[in-house]
Length: 199
Image 1 (cartoon, rainbow, N blue to C red):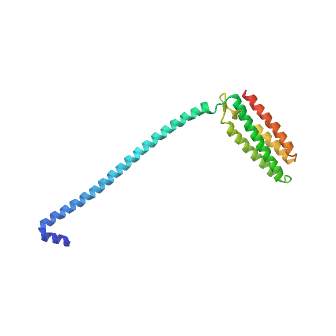
Image 2 (tube, rainbow, N blue to C red):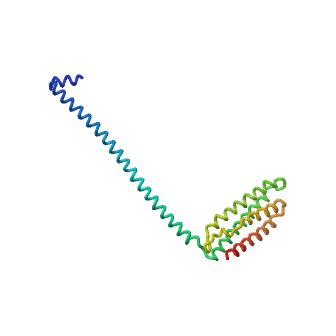
Image 3 (tube, rainbow, N blue to C red):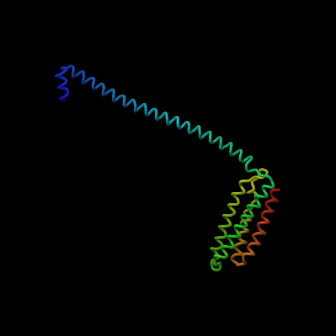
């Protein structure tokens, strides 16, 4: 209020009104500019988000097409193997499986007291052999021979046979040699059966 009195004394009452009006116009202009800048920045932000979303969608679409192409290419060429390669894969997978089960079974015999713990021993063996079988299926389903996956030639009955036979041998304490020869014979017959089915 003091400023208006001082302005009125210097410029007169009309001068003070004019200056006050100019001040109000300036404040109004300043407030409108601020609102306009916020509106523009919001509009820019919305436009930027829209452009970013469009770019991400375009990238996703491109990536999807690339993945589709790679999948078709890999299915067609990468996992298709010839007969001798299939024999090598089967031999390798089943030999590793045989050796893993043999080592685990012999370790169970050495480290555990079987008598009185038959259920626990049986559960351990069943779990280990099932896990090993699952591991084999994951490997074999990566390869195809003449359009058929190698996993198609692996039988789940073999897992059951190995589980029952090994469990029986361990619980009846037949020893490591009996287990080793039984597993060797079983897996050798599995290999030949798979190869016969392939051909």
